[in-house]
View 1: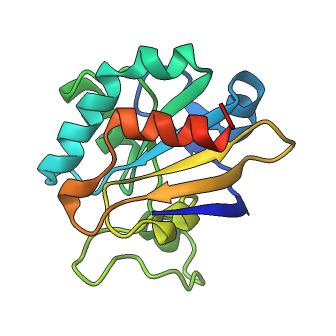
View 2 (view 1 turned 60 degrees about the horizontal axis):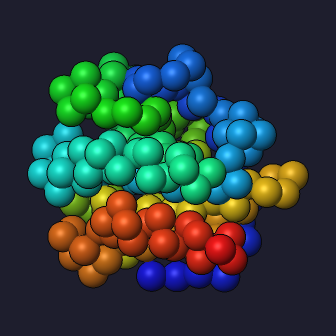
Length: 177
């Protein structure tokens, strides 16, 4: 767990979930005080699937506090759309893969995968760096001009990914509520 960070995290990524085809940090910042980014490991991770559904069930609790929830997969837009349909998710599911970006840009010096072969994030790399393991979360404070990463948490094991209640509490703490 970490807090006190002030990294700027801006993104505009394809959305496989409900909402617009592309989700941008600037659009979320105009609408919400904070954004909880749920970094999902991959399609084969049962904990990621369980957390994705739990956050979907808690979606209204976040909205009532002016906090957006978005999921992010280090995968393609098609895979993000599959997750949305398969698990009936109520929030945007963004495709953010360093591997895809690296393939599109042969000069990229980004490592396309973790040592265990799990794909890495691109736009959410700073959040990924702040978590101990995936799945994990990052909280963006969107009340200023640029979204600032103010909190991350993953856990020492996969099973320690924050619950929706813990993520909402972290977002509200970051907002001093």
